[in-house]
Structure formats: structure tokens, C-alpha cells
Image (cartoon, rainbow, N blue to C red; front, side, top):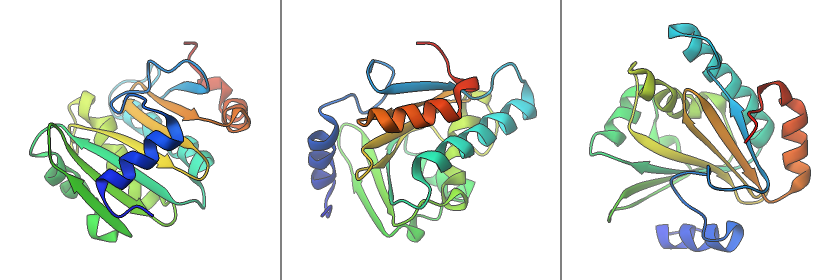
Length: 181
């Protein structure tokens, strides 16, 4: 049971090992990288990136519980997420760790595109210099399925899972968007 940020971090290491908490890019095995924005520009780039994110997230988390581990890179991050429409009080559990980096942990009993859309939108918009946006890094995690998804910006999303079957299923479904890494 996760009651503190320390509980979360301990479970994270037990489940996934002591992997980087800011990027999945250095992982080689059991990781997929998908192109989001592709060759589109402006609003079409944003819309395509968000639409592809929705499809990938639905496949990875549909009907499942989900944790968000959000690094707030500046003091404005949490305010920006709220301004984008994230209602932190809708989380079934929320924790915060303040230290070298401020981390917000949110737990939802069931994945919902509507609830998480403000976070996805904020990440995709950040590099596009569009609003709403937030300077954050977010790992979307399901501990039961042993899967982590990270939208790193409007260009792409990484999916990491311990199960080769999960990776194969996601890869087969969205193979047209795969980036060779």
C-alpha cells in the first residue's frame, strides 16, 4: 500500500529497478518509442500528437488503475497543470515530495482520458510554446501491468513494460508510428 512518497519510490524500484526517473530514453529492452507529431506543424501537430497519445494510453491503461509521477521543474508547474484543467482533488490519492526536485504523485483507481487530458496537453504544448503548458516530466504508471509511459514532448512517447507480451501487443497495434531506436 502506498501511503507516502517513500512507499511509492520503494515500490517503483522493486518493480522496475533503479531506472532513470526523468527519461526512459536510455532503456534498451522492452521499450518502444512512438512518433506523435510527425511532419505536421502548428495546431495539426498538436492535434495529431494528442490523438496518438490517447490511442496509446487507452491500449496501455484502459480500465486499469494509474499512478502519475510528475516532476515539477519549476514553482509554476502545479499551477500550470491546474490552469490546464487538472483537478488534483479528483485523484483517489495524492502525495507530494519536496526536495532536490518537487514531485507530485497522483493515483486514479481507473484510467480516464478526460481526467488525464490536461497533463498530456500540457506536456505536448510545452515545446510548441502553446498554452496550456507546464514544465513537467510525467511517468504514467500501472504497477500491476508493470508498465510506464512517458510523453517526452510533441515529438514522441516512450512505452516501457516488463512483459514482452505487452510490448508486442502495443507494438503490433501502433507499428506505423514506431520510431526505430
